[in-house]
Length: 115
Image 1: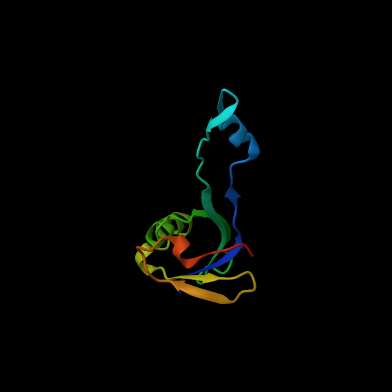
Image 2: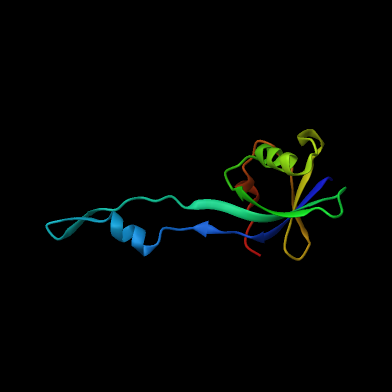
């Protein structure tokens, strides 16, 4: 299997109190509304290649990206064709978690997590 993904960390950008404070609109002393800010759902993965022993890269992926789009991103980094890839997710201890076998599923379906 050409690629092995092992989790490094997951980062989220969550709305801070400052964002919430600037989103408040007061009318007559009462809070009228809050701005809804979506969370940036990304994951930061260590990517390795089974045929390129010296290749390793830390890459950020959107959890909403399909496995096919993950493969396209990796194709640009490695030169290995999308059709030749088989992705596997590993935890930080090097234990295989699962195969990322369904190209139409979002990466988030496989629940990559911190550590």
